[in-house]
Image 1 (cartoon, rainbow, N blue to C red):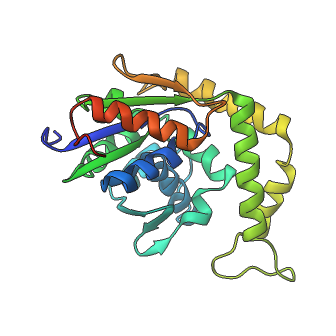
Image 2 (cartoon, rainbow, N blue to C red; image 1 turned 45 degrees about the horizontal axis):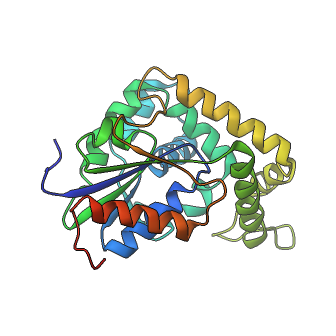
Length: 251
């Protein structure tokens, strides 16, 4: 069980809604720890691929998930001292992670790991089931949404920036650059229509999985940020947090 004295804000929502950016900004603003629960599943996907663990090897994936330990520093994600940020941001990794997350055994293996991030002075927990499953007693739960089209536009911009930043250099890749096949995936995914379709399919799978389906907690505040800037969303959430009485009024 989580220590009820530790302040937790849950930020849940579908892929591409901007919950990660919001959660990181909240953590920085309030001086709290940050948990990107989705990154844990993506790490499982990346490491499973590295270790040749098949996506249908539920036992192997669950065992791996139970031993995952990650450190989140800003937008960087470290596992066993290695920065896995480039790999876990790939659309191919997101697809694998979504499939892995559908296994109850994997989700159960990661529950204790996620709850262990709740330490003083507080935690911003970003994910899909933070408010419904992992931290059901959190004093503030946000469910952030945006239209599939808007989320696809944001994702396309992110993918293009990532591909440009880590692109091929004279046909070769450096230690911190993406593999050619991943760059090829970016090129084949460089279509707004394709991204919308991928996002909608992932949403449908996440909403209909048996274990911890994607849905807002009953006491969550739902925010549609389709036409909002990240600063506008941040201000709204900080106002809600202040009203909850959990932080000083001057924040």
